[in-house]
Image (cartoon, rainbow, N blue to C red; front, side, top):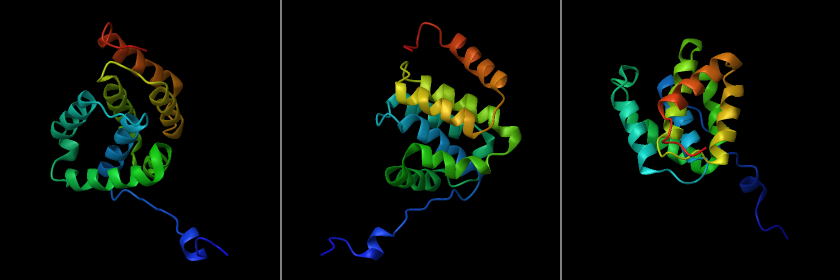
Length: 149
């Protein structure tokens, strides 16, 4: 006797961002939520990023974020990145990577899972290693003394 019918077992959760803005939100959220603890400072930094960036003007940011939260609960951080990264334009990848580093550093602690996911993101975005290292170095310099790595 089967406990679950075949229809239920074959149900696959899918998520696809509607546009590049939602993909940014998905990737940023994936990186701060991977350790299952989203600090107030991280949420504040994310809110400021979304509110102060003209890239998100005239977009339904709250609706996008709601979709991202639901998707993250079902598919996790790596899959959220995988489904979103192709929507990020080449010219925006370095900027998004930098914003993500800022978000992860916002609470002053870089958890092992966060660092691992940042490495995963770097790879998924096909960033040049030198570019990624310079971004991280520059941001760490700004956060010197405020970050526990």
